[in-house]
Image 1 (cartoon, rainbow, N blue to C red):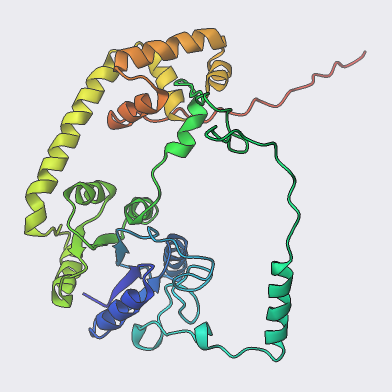
Image 2: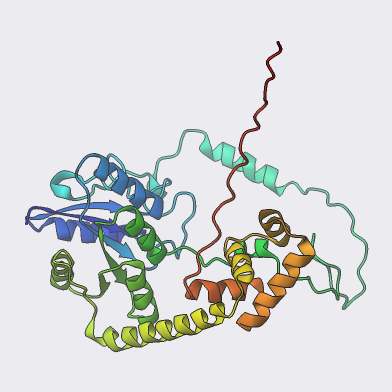
Length: 342
């Protein structure tokens, strides 16, 4: 086997640089690093375009969980802060450390005066508009919110409410995306704790290894070399829990498939539109039905699936493997006929 190209994807800079340096000490390992999902995708695309694709990606399970500010981990662009951009190795494949300013950076002459001026401006009181008095103990309505005592209305059949219900992206979400765009890439999850549920989710997303961050470097290298032999590596303590999670997921999928099978062909059409996030009016236009008919079909779908909202119906559909409706095809261009005059 030739040199192994490894990409470390972790937004904790000290950990990522230390791990990259330790791995690069191996004579047959070349290492790059990325500090965000976007940086990882760019590094993989660039490496593939240069004919030097990465073999293994080590992905932090909690990638992005502790979002930094604009100048957060790995630089303002969210990259590894390496010379030449994310995923580009420095000497010996070890990422370099950029010369960032930080807390000890020298100030420009006159900066103190400008700061005092800013503080003086900030200290100037700004007149506020007078608000009507509120009786003691009365609730104060929030700006733009419903009046006191009125609950916000949530339509269980509104498909556009699904956008806010998506789980926040993490390392496992990135892993699934990378496996779709780079099928030959092996992915190993680096985790701070052994979690059977997340490990099962990672395996379902395409991971071939799960390594705790407290593991030894020798253990990590063994897993890297093992996944390149098409092996799947899990800690023994996780194995029983992961099998239980996968069995439960299979049972839930079977039950969801049974419920979806009770729907009529038209109701399955409606359900696929719901999975695609289409609202009632959009479904009506797509299927050439009246909004009232679509609402009736949606209510029937919810009843047969035993749920009370579109979001819950979509969850059942996804467990059953129902795919979203295809985007509507654009209308054919109009053709204007010509009549030849004698």
